[in-house]
Length: 320
Ligand code: G3H
Ligand code: 13P
Ligand code: ZN
Image 1 (cartoon, helix red, strand yellow):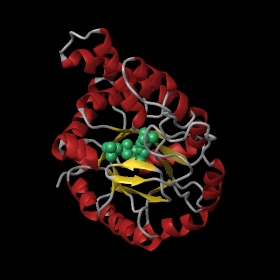
Image 2 (cartoon, protein in one colour):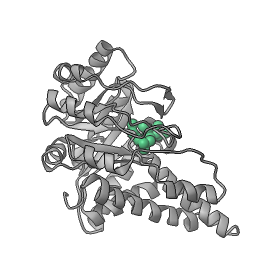
Image 3 (cartoon, rainbow, N blue to C red):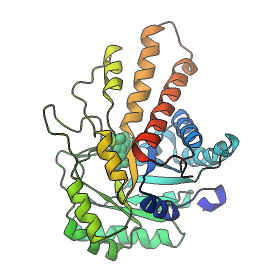
Image 4 (cartoon, rainbow, N blue to C red):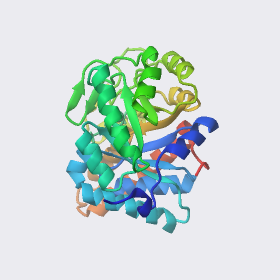
């Protein structure tokens, strides 16, 4: 059993308390490889932001769970080496079984999401409580989810979203003992969140209603990529084919970050930034075959995107 405390990671408890009181949100960036991890840490050190490094079960399958755990330990040392030891959380994104959550606890994670949102309400409570009871023994914080986001996570695809029902949140939080709650208010996973011509708006009214029921309780937003059109255009200009990709407007996320929303999940925008940069190199220098020559620019572009989010969307700069 590896304890997250021994490798210099922190859980989310203090970070969320400060974020709710300070009216900002902490970035939760997904990583699957070294360049993404480096870009995240560079961006957060340069802006002095705390960070949540997120690992999905797909990332564990792709990169190997042991390698990812050592990369998180490396991230702690890397931040120190860059000159500013920011608080770093290692978080399981969309855990779907008790066994997966337990395995992450044993390999050094400091925060766990158990996503029981696809189960019935009572089943969700039962599974979430089981994970909370286990994790709390080790001072690991737990995120639960109520409501269903549209989009794809690993092998789970939901065509339709269903908003979180504000009348359920108090009961869910009380009976499960979760430390934070992910809600569905119109955000969704992936790069195609809205159809062309559709009104692009998240339900801040539902968020306000939820906050009234559980004042000051840490809220999490998934599916919060903004799908910058400049990146989509760059991808298409250099041979890509991403038609009608639309995300959440940054101003709406900024408003959410000023509420009890204290963790905002961003993955797809990073994928777009890397893809655009790599396609550009491939198009402009077709004779290039050193991976450092295209992964390097991809990492730089990713870092700029992450810094932009921290300063202009989440407001977590200088909070580390
Ligand atoms: O919620 C989904 C995240 O973007 C992770 O995606 O399951 O493809 O690793 P993934
Ligand atoms: P995006 O697909 O909008 O980046 O959402 C990522 C996410 O919610 C990870 O859990
Ligand atoms: Zn998610």
